[in-house]
Structures are given as structure tokens and as C-alpha cells.
Image 1 (cartoon, rainbow, N blue to C red):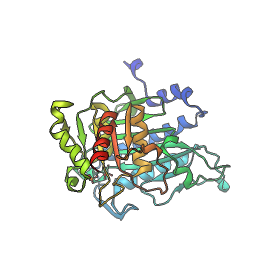
Image 2: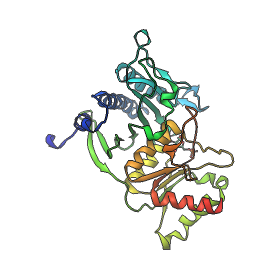
Image 3: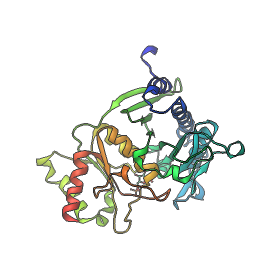
Image 4: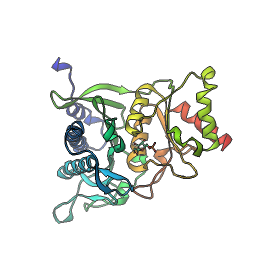
Length: 338
Ligand code: P6P
């Protein structure tokens, strides 16, 4: 019944009282993001039908081939956030430098900063596997009412005010937190609204899924190899039978583990001492959200992701994220065996 439907915007306004600072600015930022991802979703859903597939024959700052949807998603988010009056600066995976918000005579009193990966998992676009958008919102730390700065975008994850992701999958869901629990909204295409479908999400007590790219096993540390072999073997009689699941889109692998429990690992290796995933717009937003769902996120060596001080917009860190007991167990193996 209509009375049972709670839309994202109704929910945001209802929960506005939870926000320590916002006089509606954070609410309108979240609504702007909701609008942008509905537009992105429309293009994602017809990606197979229009000439939006395939490479834009451009290489982004990550040195990766940019798919046209990446660029489209990036543009939509920048346009939505620039047209509002609540964002003073943006950092995006697709942009080498910060994205300044054009304003009259360089005055921008907006209080908030938004960082995002506009289209995570783009290598999965052409095979119709789930892809996603990841975002985090901070309050600006730069003084005055000029344009926001790179330092505004390079705050520790502990300072996050809100973070979340959109998964464009069998259905399109927006999952986010403002530091008061995690809530999931499913897009109802018939009314074009995200509707509350997964209130108060918490990780299941026990998780039995491990998610990592096994093809890199030979590059793993001795401790991580032993941890993975433990999950494949002795764990069965001690902590339960595990399943391996890996989609190759961070948003999809994290979303599954959030609902079913488990651990996702993208580790440091000798070849990639900082791993692959980006701290500011992938690992921090996910770490903030998983901690809100009773989870944990570290670099595999005892350092919480949210406590790492970023020094570069695109810096990478290893990521061990999911049920606390599994993250702790992985770290025990690494500590013991190196
Ligand atoms: P690999 C997608 O390209 C991505 O950035 C994340 O979404 C995903 O978790 C990871 O890379 C997959 O990397 O090396 O396993 O293909």
C-alpha cells in the first residue's frame, strides 16, 4: 500500500534531525546524489541497447581504459552536485585533480565535500555483471568561503559525515549511512523512487563467505596464503564451511557480504605493496559504512582504514573488510606467518 512506502527523500527529511550540523544542506546533497544515480541507472539499464558500450578510447588517471558509462556517470554526479549549493569541492576517480565548483567571483560558502567513484567495476559493464557508484561526504575543513581544497578531500575516513553506494544489479539499490545505522533503498522504476527496503542493515553474526581474486594467490603473503588455505580446509570443523565468491566489482562483493556476512580482501602483495583499491573514494566510504553495520575494515596489518591519513587523492591501500572475527583472524595469520 502507498502508506507503507517510504521514499528516500521522505526518509532523508525524517532523519534530518539526526544530523549534528545540517540545516538541510546534507539532506539536499543526499537527494542530489539520489537524483544523479537515477539518471545513471537509466543509462546503465540501456547500455546494451545504445552505442554507450565499449571504450571511449580514453585512458583515465588510473591508466585504465575509460568506458563511456564511466564518463557519463562522472558527468551526471558533477552536474548534480555543482547545480546544488551545498558542495564546495569534489574528488572523483575519473579526475586527476579536484573538481572545483564554478561560482560567482570565486565565493563558495558551501559546507560539504563529496568524493566518489562514479562507476565502480566498469570492466563488468560489457558482460552485464553488477556495477556500482561509491560516495562519501565530509564537512569542509578549509576556512572562509572560497572554493574547497584538496585538503578538504583528503581527510581521514573517521571524518566522514555520510557514505554509501549504489549497486546497479538485478535491482538498483542505494545503501547509505549518516553515522546512525545503515539503510537500503530499492529503486521502484514504476514510480522512479528509491523506497526503503532494507532498514537498519547489520552484518550477520557469522559470515562464511570469503571474497578475493584467487588468481593472485601466488603473490599473497605467507600469512594470507595460510589464512585462505585454512578457510578452504580446517575451518570446516572449527568455524564452519566457507564459500568463495568473487564478482570483481567492489560494490557487488561488499553488498553481498553486508547482507550475508563474510570477508572481502584486496591485499598488498610484493608486486603491489599498497594493493589496488583507492583509499579516498572506495575503501573509506565502504569502511565507514561497514563499521556502522558492526563490521571492521583494516589494511591487514592492524591499521583501521578510517584512521589512515590520505596523502594523495588517488592513493591505494590494502583492504580487509567484513565480519570483525574474520578480519581479526586474517590479521592473526599475517602477524604470525608474515
Ligand atoms: P581485480 C574494479 O575494477 C575494481 O576497481 C573493484 O571494483 C574490484 O573490487 C577490483 O577492481 C577487482 O580487481 O584485480 O580482481 O580485477
